[in-house]
Image 1: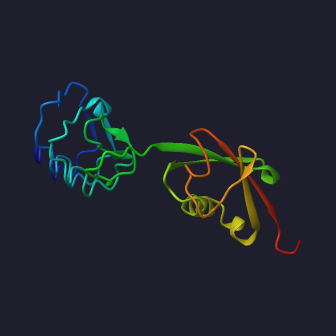
Image 2 (image 1 turned 90 degrees about the horizontal axis):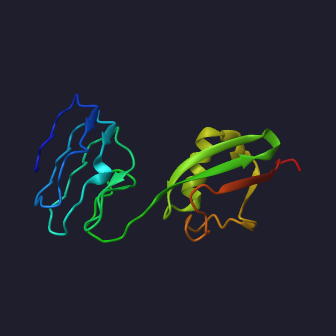
Length: 170
């Protein structure tokens, strides 16, 4: 399967549910340079053996989010372009920020090993006015440590993070 869909630059959607991949030995650059590819249905059923070459499989798939391959496992949802040969499996989770003063719920997808400050920056992109406030976050009744990861803060998929803040003049 090496270079199977390589440089299919107009390709946006694929349906690969019937692909049998458990004996494939090479998937290098399989989807590389598919710059408009947005979705691959059925890819979660792929099985990758530990000797399969997967380098560059999603290189320059700029529209394709949350995919990676972990050998000996099925393809799992993850941040794109994080292809690695190690056995670690990082999970994409969705956390919900709740701003009580504005009655706003805002979900942010993230990796469980993302630093909380990285997630906070995603929040600031959507709500830039929060940058000027003295913010603290509560998750599961505990104050969130901004210098550690989502996992280290024991934040799990579907958790809600309460945003509390004081205006600068208070």
